[in-house]
Amino acid sequence: MSDSFPDIKSVVVRVITNKPVRKTPYQVKGVFMRQYPNEDIIPMLNGFYRDRYLYPRVQVKILNEQIHLIGINEGVDPVISLTKRLKSLDFGNITFDVEHTDLDSASNQFKPSENLVHYKFITPWVALNHMTGGKYKLLTNQEKPSYLNKLLGQNIIFLAKEVGVNLTDDILTKVKVSSLLPKSVDDNKWSAFMGAFKTNFILPNYIGIGNGITRGYGAIYSASSSDIIFYDENKLTKGEIEDFDETEGVDSISASDVPNPKRKKYSKGKKKKFNPRGKLKDLKSKKNKRYSNKSQRKQSKHYNASNRKKQHHHRHIISEDYDIEEVSGNIKKQNNNDYNDDQRFNTEKHHKQQHKF
Image 1 (spheres, one colour):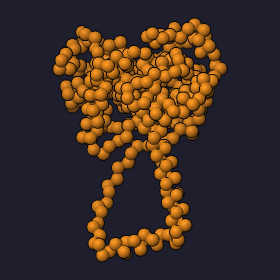
Image 2: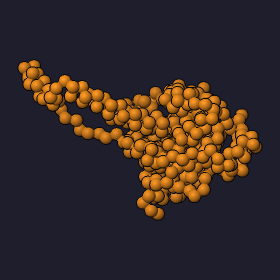
Image 3: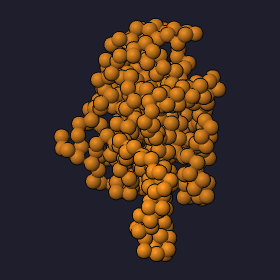
Image 4: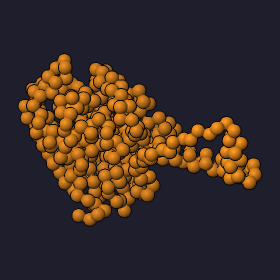
């Protein structure tokens, strides 16, 4: 395998329990962390590796009231290791006995395909955040499909770069959603769609795309173009499926148009020295020597402001369009945030909303 397209492996483990699991991914991860604190999978679940892996290498999904563990590359061995130890899951108010596990592994993932590969979203694809959602509302119905195509293409390119794939060819995408009118999810001004898509890129089953990956959103599954695609109450009609099979309406996205993943760098800050009040004038004079006149100061101020704006823009794209969370240097603070999310997204209302589409 070439350096451009390394052999990236994936694994999917379906945990079969004695009772249907009506829990959220956050609750399941919490049980794993309590019962198996020394397993290698734990740093991939509790946020410790967020600065190392911007795209989560281990994902937890609840599909058809069954727990699914997805391991990608570095997450494969930790998932398999945990699976061997699973006997029961104690949620406090209910305990699930693990009857058996089904394991499905794959190799040569995350690489271009000569033909368009057909996937369907099996959980809502949270394509729009508060920024992209505002732009989407201003588009006509004729423009919206192309906009969604490009958003999906950007998602795929970012994901590919994050797992170490060096893309040289453009990514092709065509999305078919059950409705151009998105549905709101959670309280983050996110909007989601159900549907299917085609792309010239091979992706593992069950991985998440878009926003809300750690909450189970955006899970995909490969399917042949002849499959009838059901989305609970919504389904694509035969005519829509035939239209989707055509190559018309495919958009092309260049890898160079998507910023490379940026991990937060930690530097040891220098201790600020205390300056006596009497030295303030010296400090000001040194600072003023950097500028020869007032106009230069204004020009420099304007330059710095525009630079900050550009940097903020890229950080915003990565953190929201691709569901990458900002990394905090304080691990305890990260865990508190996870706990707060756990309180917000482990309600019965949220669980029903995830499966309402």
